[in-house]
Length: 348
Image (tube, rainbow, N blue to C red; front, side):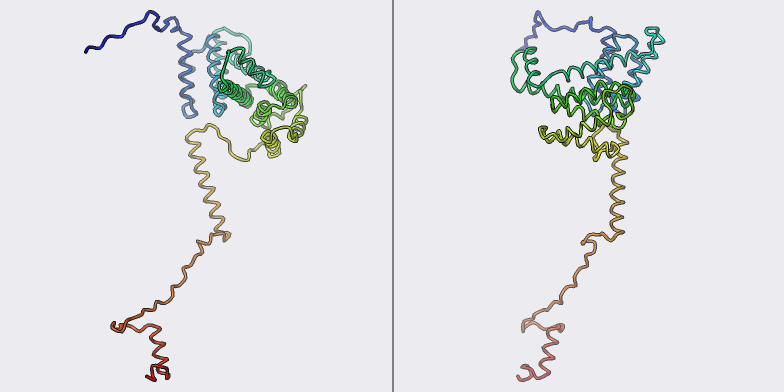
């Protein structure tokens, strides 16, 4: 039977053509580039992003939002996104100055990005405890299942840690000053960690200190906390038995890193190019070969390397009376010699 054609409902979805304006098209192009961005394709895709033409304040703010969300949700790629922001800030600032839209020395890209970082930091550190977060969430979303609440808590924690990691990477690119990181981030997190002793706050503080490393010990005028005071208070906090052991060990790891010139005991996961991955594999293989050669030179070969096969015992063949002897075995020689000396065979 013939197939009845589909009927179009009165309220069928239709694409709104007014969304196809210049701003939306450019933001969607940036989003598409970000989804394909890797260290291998960074230079090529960055040129494509610049060619889009981000010379409008409204478009620039939307682009900053897209990049910020990617950086927060993908913390392992935070160094790459920080590098992207540094280059975009410099290049867009030059374009804005050429167009005459701005005349001051402040980069509009940097101002927009730091505003987002600050808003997320204040928002994540403002909640007193998870119970308050649940109350606020229920007031905003209405009735939610327990698993939905836990999912929202996990998402909020990931955003908080992702934002802290991104701030640290921006600091490493000289995108944020030491004074801002020390006074507005580290000092605030340290006070919250001592006061509330929440795991998320302590983990955020440790993440920021590990990312910033020795740069966080640079001198700062009118600093809210000195490096000596900071790490002394962290040492006291690491001995607090009311904290979970995971948190105490995390703080101790930060203190050990500082004592080891901020070198990690083990390599951490981070984004790498294919060439860097191959170079790491070759380096590890070379280290294994060198260690094996050094072990051999010290006489440290295994027992298997020194194994010498034990000589096999002589085989004695027993012949039946009906089988003619082809060769005389060692046992036959002994018996003949014994018979020649007057043994039982001679008596017979």
